Length: 279
Length: 310
Image (cartoon, rainbow over all chains, first blue to last red):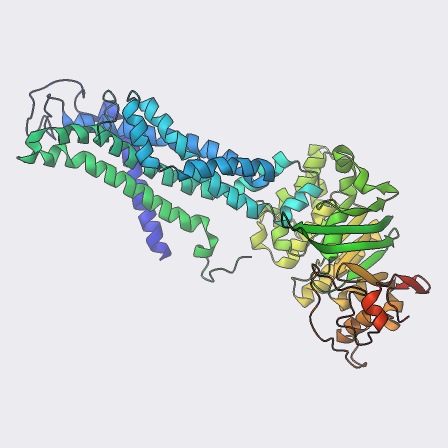
């Protein structure tokens, strides 16, 4: 079982590495400028590997540049969510009164159905990458805050916390040196969960036409393909709709595999053949 | 050295109809410098709470703790930080007394770093000294707590505590989670350290054999109250309180005497019985015991008992 996890983790990491390389080196990898117009609706050929779309853009180049947009949004939202969520979770778990207040805010935000509200707000505001990021951030910090808090609640009862107080460690010192390192595994797992959610939600919004029309993400490529009636009556969907869809699927799959493998690394009980014998 | 006067801690629960759990109720005792007081009683009787109260890890409900004449409960944050190094505590479970993600060396260096009494350059040497004093190998420095045994971890805890140069050490069942053979090693180490550094111990335990080896005086607790306190010899040879007698008869060292088996359960500390707290299980209960709560009275030299029968 452990070996299986390792293999899956390596596969996931491999997939993610490929996508990250594509995103970072997009100008070198893309065969054409994605805004350059060629003859529209061309079938795949040696000069346009995935053909061209209804306005003549090279589809492969669009997807390569789309990797940048999709991964950028997911990365920025996840990083900020984790920073905010972890800090609030640490404070909320360690100080009872502040924690009570923070958790009531979390409760309220968590009761709001996430995706429907994002759709509603997104349809009113001007669609842009930064607006989308801000929207996802409203919700992104709540789950990590809650999960980190519950872990801190148990961690702060350990004897080494009392022992550190006795040798003169301040609250800030205890949080930074003793509690934070012990919640990092949880933060990493939450980071992956959030990235998966954002990638799926962002492409969903784009699909509905609520994405940024200037920043072509995978979801936007998909959206424009879907809006073009020809795809229903010809083979065009095979090189226009399928590739961005597969990109989304593989990214999410890669993240899931990595998360699954990390679960083992971070949970000594799974590593230990005498499971549960924590020393 | 340490004087505890009328120490009281009630835990309350419930918002409208408050209920109180009387964990520690009007407990007083003294420990002289370089001596060990053994605090015994069954689990849940408030032994650990007393230790935590003295360290101010838990807020007291009432009473006073005088440490070298300084009232610990009257100190503000800064004064408390200044005095805390002198009082240290060893906890039951050595494995959770150390941060699992910190190397042993880093853990031992932590008090030196936080306290800043020793210049950085000399810390390495001090750490080596400490490790030697508690009988560990210098190579243990780079290990993590889960790579060491419980006994070794308890030695690390002791090294950390020694780094603070404490005067009073509160040991809360320091050996209860260790093997018997390892227990003896740790106890011997603690006795050696006491001789060497003139430590004062408050030794909390439920193990009478261990306490007999360690303590100069013994205090017996039942449901948050002291029922008997005296020199170790006096307690073992002529215990006056029926609860102490029952405890001793259950201990392995006293095979000769007949065993006193107590009936019933310990009363709940929330719905405390009226009168003597022990009367529900006492084999020699009188009517007076159900009405009036006994006070500690002197029955011998430095030997106090809270029982109507003496």
